[in-house]
Length: 116
Image 1: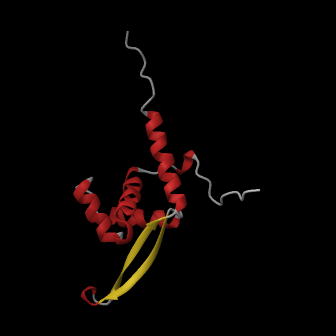
Image 2: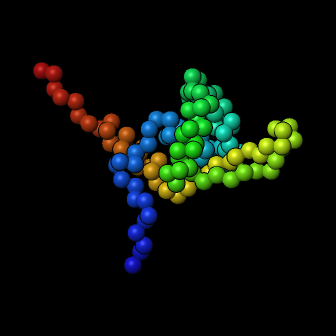
Image 3: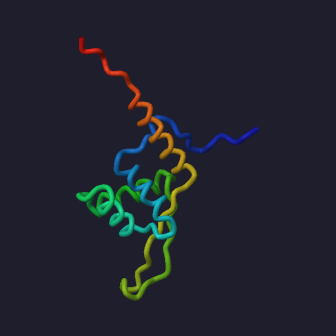
């Protein structure tokens, strides 16, 4: 018998706009997904007015929810010995992103009432 997932993906787990954009950016950036690269990708490609604080808050919230995993890279001298924090999307994160996109797709099929 298959194990029940710890955190099922249900409609209550649908992502907000910034969370969805952050997950997509992390997926697209792959191994190069860290805070500033996600921020720059979103600011350049999709959301020019987004703030770094919004992106980093979303990264931390998505990690807390189990949709992202993070790890520290090697310390970098040019960063004062600080390491970059890298992110990757978990399987659960991929599922909730798919569920959110499917819900949006279905919502676009809603028939508008007749105006006659």
